[in-house]
Length: 124
Image (cartoon, rainbow, N blue to C red; front, side, top):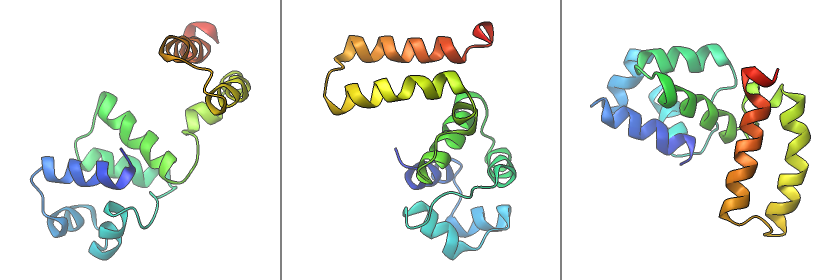
């Protein structure tokens, strides 16, 4: 799901109209509409995203998905991933395999497990 669709789904799940949501967050409705339609990417400022996540009562996995999807809307890796050299070092192998369609479902699952292991607090 892209950031705009996620943002819209969250707003609707909270039973907020676009204008109500914008008033609550202090955001211009025209810009919010452009965000929801995917015309503009998510804000880059983490403080803004955190404020929005707080206002929308996002916690746990939903909050992380919100932050990650925002980064991807800007065509960036999430900050915690982009700052981990070990994870970055594993990405070229993934890109090669993905481009060559060499990863079947099991190989993709294994890759994800390997990246998670690299990024886990135990491995640092």
